Length: 234
Length: 288
Image (cartoon, rainbow over all chains, first blue to last red; front, side):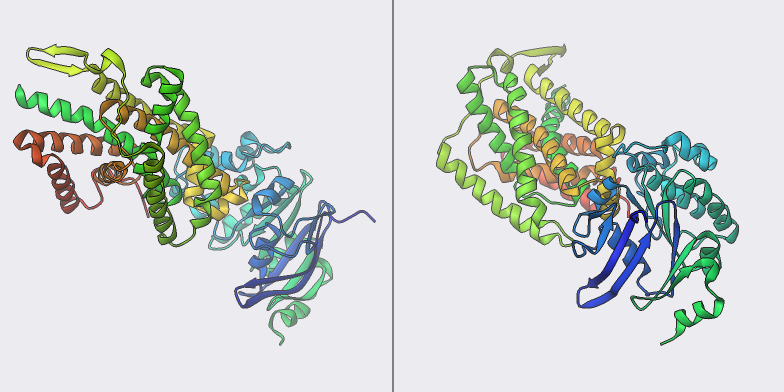
């Protein structure tokens, strides 16, 4: 069996005295879409931030392409090919749309993604490329955030709540483009509140509750009852 | 014509004040660091130029080419080794550390160079002038300084808004954590900003040393002029900083004409007046 692209091994995470993750383990194979679901405060965002190097973790708690990267700072992790689309988009407000995309690509990792390809994926951004990023609608800002992450040509893309605060039609629009992103050979971890959306998009699902993995399995194999139990059971 | 002359000379001096201020403005904009040692670092640049000119026997204005990389290297190291450790969510630690640095620099210079006043000799360019009308002439040196100030500010503006480096500065200033997610090491980005700031400080220091006497104690007054120019112009606006420097220079020139003792007072009064009427400065650009 080939080595997993990403392996999280018994990851703990803390905010001061508060422990947010307890021994979380997770695996992502190349080309796979993995969803992480769970209620508010379950530790989903903390998990993605730990993988991206924003939290600081145990050396061997996060292994990417066989290399332990738990202690690496985020700028080194992204250079290895792990990009995060942060919750709430977090575009750079004093940069234009195109500048936001360019700064995502400033590492110049080789790969299929460049300005033209991102504009091909989200044509509306081409018309708005000279505008300051705060002038865009929420959905367009989310497209910039995804495009900005793609510009680093990641092998693994982490998407944190990309549907948050967006109209359902926009969410569907964005999710419809995910397969074409995966077709370029990258893997995805999506964190979602919208369970139905997550189950549709993902091959494999982890359900977090209070910082622990309560349920995992192929998305087709999970029943609504099992997920509800993992969400709410004590 | 007399007053036109005074305002013109004041405006030219203001170019130098804008140079003092440009580095301060840059550093505050990128990393929210208020550098109390900024004025003393200008004086350090003046002494570096003094050593370079006496060692190589070249014109002080030529020495800028050598002083710029020296100061930029000092700036990079200072940021990496010291100032990066003070940055966080609190404005106070960098304030205290740079205040301490200011004291250390002044006393270090005093030990090395004594309290004697020095000046760089730039030759005939110091006394040359260009007639621009009946009874009106501008000194070549003040004119050079003014043109250099405009060129430096235009260059900073271009770097900030047209280059990848400037993009990295603005992104890091907007959101440090997300900038790291783009692969920007903020310790390195901050050090580059300080190196750029110190390159401007080098130019300001040499021009200061050619124009007037300097000794180890004059840094804090240059810092005040710089602060006032930044605040008058409005935070975050480079051209505003130039305008602030010019207003300060003109106010000082007018004050000095009324009474020689009023030169500095007039500058401070103009500053207070503008802050009272427009607390955000004339051309503010900082949002949020």
